Length: 584
Image (cartoon, rainbow, N blue to C red; front, side, top):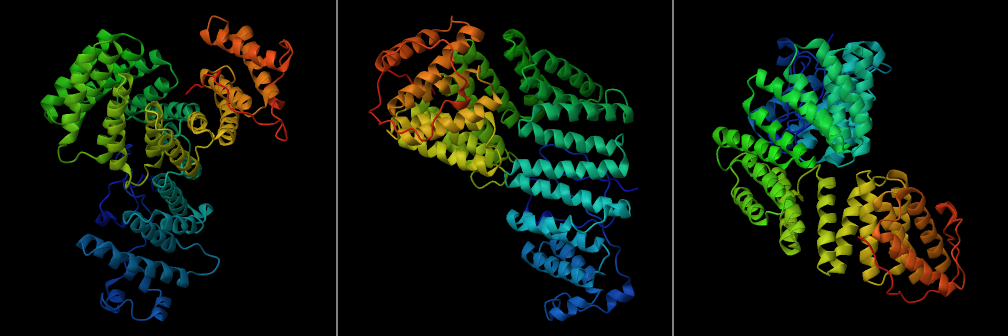
């Protein structure tokens, strides 16, 4: 039975690297950064006798009626492969692949699934992707996944699996995360049906899907899949295998994201032991950096410094003083010293990292440099140097703006830039930056995430500063629905949003609505959060002012926010009051 395996197309794949596999695919290893095109089932080569009757390579465009010849499809597909291999250019290969797919489609027997057609569509889509034409690849792959009949055996299952995984990769490159994960889930279902749940190749796909879910911040689902992957690899591999180490590193990342630092540390130590047993010195150093991050989260700073210095020694000796890995350790040390108040040391490490990123060694990707610049900008921001932080964010965005599959990352950078503009008092630029970030997040299917709600709140604050009160109210209301769902009413982000929304209602003349919100917030603090927070007294005094204005006393039986807002309210708007302190 063939292995049902697929991996992503890398973002930096050169145009001439598309290949058409002759045999059924094996089980290549998957990593988050190296993702070759998904393999597809392949028709056997035409016999020499039949090939001898074919027109020369320059003649396949002569007459479309020749596409009805059943021998022409395999010939054109071979031409596409040979054209790519010879380096003649993807445009000619694209023409051959299009005509091959048309030929297979014309010659397909009605009612019978043609694996040749499915394979040619996979190849055509891969060429589109190598040219950066991802939107054109999507309908091709949507057609390809409809061709195989999974019930007809492993070859059809392989074709369907490869199609779904390749379509998921393409959606990922377009930043459409939800659609991407949906395709991977369909592919995993087909693979399990064909191979069973305990197959090692199923474990690889589970980890692949878990990585995608981590990127989408679906940590509970990712943790469940990662546990399944660990079980499968423990059953099929030797103890302390490289596969198990990779699984544990992913599990550590998930635990860290969920705030379970002790569990993350345990997984990283086990992964490090496995890498040491396999002689993977550089991988051990990379794990040491992750261990240092966990120690820093636990405020165990001396242990964090020791882990970072261990990693730094290995990277300098194995990769050189100017390698990005060295720069990233400098960034982590800069962050640590900034947190411990040693600003001179922190800035020195930032400058050392920036020197490396300014003159990167060959092989350094734009994504690596942009990630480093973004991390350094956060350090400068915490040092109260927003101008320097903004410059670094602008450089990072410029590096990524033409890179496919980076829309969510760019959206995050634009949101950070919006905050810097806001701090600097450049409110119009802040609003535009937030608006651009929100548009990208909506397009990538992240409109229900907590981060999306936070960016809505920040854009609302910029609108308040620009006296666009109605627009601010709409943004705050949309953010409230998301943050209540994703974070709950007692989360600090949600509480801050309530205060902003109440202030906006007051500025609009909707005093009763503002009172309702503040009474609800005070009740939450009194009953669930405690009144020691300094915001409690501030909100209490704000409520007293509003109640005095409305001529009544506080209602101790605050109503739920469910029915707080009357969209048909006809109260007269008034000028914004200065008694509110908006929270970003």
